[in-house]
Image 1 (cartoon, rainbow, N blue to C red):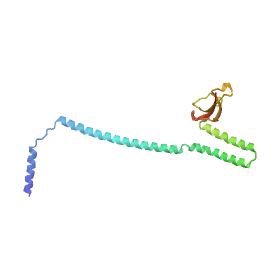
Image 2: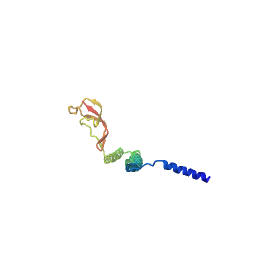
Image 3: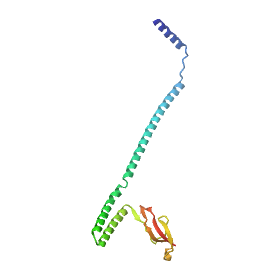
Image 4: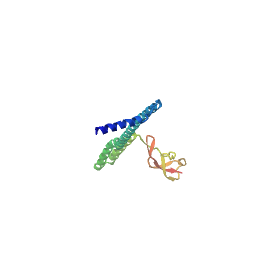
Length: 181
């Protein structure tokens, strides 16, 4: 059996000797080196792409989460500042129930109104001045037209049905007005 193995090895060696060996030239060496370099570069770029993609995905998730948190708590500051106004209204209601003097109740409600108006002003909300002003579609909404009571009120606001407001120079509610013609 050992003899058979030796003979098989000898046949393999003869077969290998008969095969013509390829001559490796410098051009082939350079091409193989370039291919290896390009393969390495491709692997590096693929890795960078995957990392960048993962970083962007994490960034997107993080900003979305922050935006959701901000949306949930955006009105918190305003609501906290409105609580004293609510307390004052409750005191006024209780005072009105206990008191028979209407002038003190009116004075209390006017104080609360003043507090609330100053709070809104601090937050950047301003009332749109519309009475007897030129009608402007950018800040007014005409509900109806009536004959002008005076000649100088033609095309001007004669009556305000609902006040309009701006928040930092942006109209948040148009003035609902009656225009003279």
